[in-house]
Every structure is written in structure tokens, then in C-alpha cells.
Image (cartoon, rainbow over all chains, first blue to last red; front, top):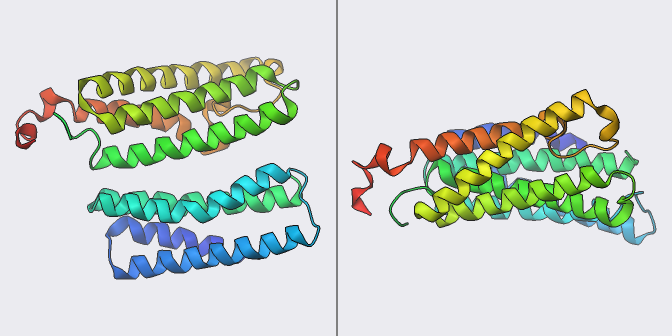
Length: 110
Length: 140
């Protein structure tokens, strides 16, 4: 799937978030969320057109989670406006990278 | 919140991680139990148990106070014992584990986070304990 391009970028976002919370980080994470939404829409379109990964339920679970992780991480991050809040958002970005990897594996039938 | 800052700062990161792993392990165990329980019932039940422990540990950390602290302490200890025992067993007796659990190979399939999480949890419980922070926790 098209997601492979973005995984590298997510690592950068995670590291950047690790430093401090600022407007640039919020823009980064918002852009990432938009990419994830686009990915979810693209995947949903392919599912509707009849393509089915072998483990359909697992794929769907990962897909839904991939969209929800970042908003949740940002909310938690705002509750904790310190360095640790940035770590939470960084962990969220890393989670997205892992989720994307798993999405591609499951789609390929691994 | 109550007498200590168990659920603030690094504690909040731990809460997020525990929530994530409760979800990941729970969802995976749910799918496996629902679709192919006969293949490796022990492994899937262990995964489900791990998910439950993560969830309870998270609740303990969120609640804070002496009760929450005790709850989290028990969960982290069980977790650490579980990941060590299951991790060792999965390497020594491979036949008993035809499919992976969250704790197989000391959490290898999950980037060893299952091994690190209880250790971090126990360290945090100690670092934030009332006796260690009695000077700073007076404000609440």
C-alpha cells in the first residue's frame, strides 16, 4: 500500500515530539493524521470494491485504531503539558508506524 | 489527585502505554480466541490474561492513592513474573507454544516493551511513593 513512504517521516515526528511541545509539532501531527485518514479512505475504497485481506477482522481493527491513536495521544498530551506529554505524543507516532507496518503485512497476507 | 502524583508526569506516559497494550493484547487475543482457539488455547488465554492485567494496572495508576498504588504494584509484579516465566518457557519448551503470546520470547514480538513495562512501572511506583516524595507532595 501507499503507506510505505510515510513510515520514515513518522519516526522523525516521534523524535521531534520528544523534545518539546510547540506549534510545529502540532502541525506535524495534524498532517500525519490527515495522511492516516487518507490511507483509511483509500483502504476502505479498496475493501468496498471487493478486495479482501485474509484476516479481514484484524485488518479492520488495525485500520480503525490507526485513525484513533493520534487524536487520543494529543488529548492525553494536552492533559500533561510537560516533557512527558511530548513523550506520549511521540509514543503515539511510533505506534502509528507499527500499526502501518502491520496493516501492510496483514494486507499482504502475512 | 489524591495523596500522591502517581498519575501525573511519567505516570501519565505509563498509563497511555498500559492502555495501548491492554488494547493491543486484548484485541489480538479476542480475534485469536474467536477464530482459531483450538490451535493454541493456552497461548491465547495467556494473551487475554495479560491484557486483563494491563487493564487493571492502568486503572490502578489512574486512581492513585494507596489503593491504586497497591493494585498497580500487584499487577506490575504479576506482569514481570509472567513475562519472565512465559518468556523462558516459550524458549525452553517451544512445543507447548505453537503460536506466539504477548509474553513469548520476553515480548520479542512487541519490541520487548512487555518486558520493559513492568520494570518501568515498578521503578515509577517506587520513585513516586509517598515516603520518597513526602517533601513535595504536601501541596495536594
